[in-house]
Image 1: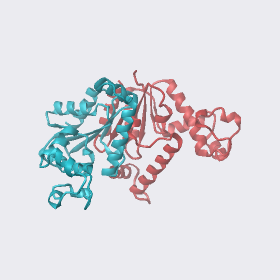
Image 2: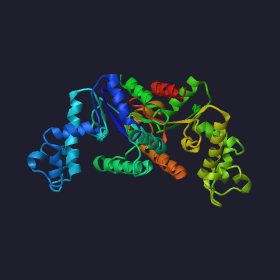
Image 3: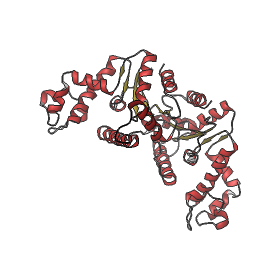
Image 4: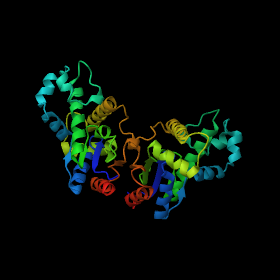
Length: 197
Length: 197
């Protein structure tokens, strides 16, 4: 079966988002990154400030009915993160229903795991490669790039396991995994485009 | 730096060995699979029966000196598996020194991790895909293919962690990881050849 939807999961600083954008451009299909998915999720009925205001407590039944049932929303005390996760799940499922696209981040690999028209890529690179890259792109900060990456990696790993029960970075979850220290971003995008064409 | 040596780590039944052979043919370089490495290791001074006879007890100092010092051979009670592992480590290091080649299995990814002229690939596929493949290639056996695969996977995971301290199947350990249920063997070989050329 032709795989028209591409999910890109990536280590922070590995260039996964850039690869996703290149793939979308080359295939001429929509590109949704983490921020865009978040925005669409929130705009689809819930303003960002709503989550902040109500996220710490469970919303009423009416709102539950819009959330992703399979995630087993708690009867009470849903955190802002859980609330956002739920509406992002349904948003990603809906985006995929609309047709071919590239989705970066937001655990889309897990959310779309049961569709057989989805190609899953994981983008990673060794710490030193990513450290050099984030300083070049985002500049220095108070924390060293290595500490920033360690914190991001840890948070992503915990978040992924919490919401999916799977191990972050497990090769067997993806159709292809690419180390961008060995394979440059343009080449990585070309490989993915070639595989889904 | 050009990567002339290719290690292929693979889940049993995923077609990794076939990909390795194809890559070696396409690049016209030597191909060493698990059995061949084992044979070379044993022939380089130790007959296979030697390991069986002496493997359960530590050999004398003279033999230690041939083994891979970094593995920290125990002062006593070295198992046959440890003994074989040690001589395979030194064998793989020597094979890599000889020049371009493809090495499948035997944790060569770990043993050659400090060389920067090595390209590391991991080949995997979902259980059902591998089950169908091993029955087609090796026929039925008393055990179901799923049970055979589960046993093999578990043994490989434990062995890999025991000797390397790393997690088997962690995408970040490889330059590329490929799911052969989504990408056929010939295509996978072409991707690797293209990347190392």
